[in-house]
Amino acid sequence: MTTFDPTKHSHCRYNPLKDEWVLVSPQRLKRPWDGRVEGDADDDDETANGSNQKENPLCPGAKRSETITNPFYEHTFVFENDFPALLSDIPDPLNNEKNTNDDLFQCHAARGVCKVICFHPNSKLTLARMTLDDIAHVIRTWIDVYRDLSYKYRWVQLFENRGDIMGCSNPHPHCQVWATDFLPNEARIKHRTQKDYFDKHNGNVLLLDYIQRELNDFKKERIVIDHEHWLVVVPYWAVWPYETMLLPKRHVLRLSDLSSDEQNGLGKIMKELLIKYDNLFKTSFPYSMGWHGAPTGDIIQEDCSHWQLHALYYPPLLRSAKIKKFMVGFELLAQAQRDITAELAAKTLRDLSGEIHYKDNKTV
Image (cartoon, rainbow, N blue to C red; front, side, top):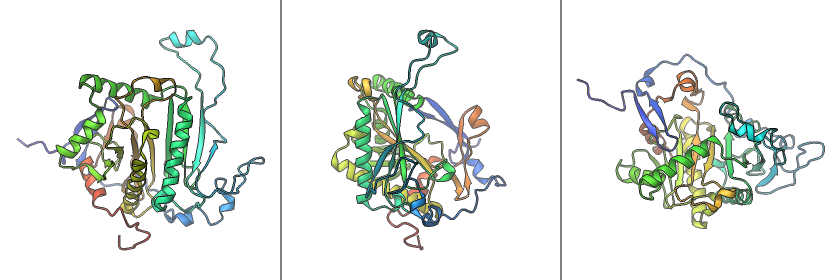
């Protein structure tokens, strides 16, 4: 009888953070591809982002509307989204008590604020190609905005969509922050799963136990980068082809709790990871990324020791700069699925240079 081999045979892996399973199908890597291939867009940031910065509404001094002109900022720039998905001052729905008690039709007001953070005045730069000093300004701005919003809102979601393939509407380096007076689905689930693990394992933190197992029990086979204060790992339960999780080694609840040394270390490991991503397919690697930490607002007074701060990178590219993963069919209707194993993805990223960007050294 054939012996099970996780590098060749389909199997399911459990994600304890989301209480769900992912189907891993490594045998599908041999499948020929005759499906959609992304266009031959120039991956040169200077070309993609245009040479005339005055036409970009996120640039210094640009007019975003008839009445709003950006300042001539030198580092980061924060403003409220001109087209927000959330509003801060709205009434409760009519018959609110009935809406919340109905098992089939529930509704509640969704209050919040949406902000935009420009990373740099130069539209032609990405985080991978910024200096560590530039990235340090971004991290400090993240923390300042997060801290300011955390006093009022239960959840502060900081996220970056990079590349038009991820729906980014403007190539200027920037991210968004949406703060809500409720816990969104992902946050609500992780709040529960981490607490369940904490209670079951006598106060142990799920993600801290996880990284210790990765470091000590599994020969670091899914570790991509291991620094003094931070770790990058392709999660055992990863869904996206080159998905990674970035997290501090110390028990940290929220972005605003990072020490100065951890902030400095964060800039270094982020830059290294993003250079590796770009070097993988010799392209400005698209992704959606975001931070998850303990809830805030009125929940900040509760004991959230079960939480561990972490960032997630979800890149869609699968085989090349032009072939991406699609979440369709079985994955939409039944369960997430991936072809390349987390171990192979981690080794591929680990073996790439994280110091020299391919645009700076054509031999990379």
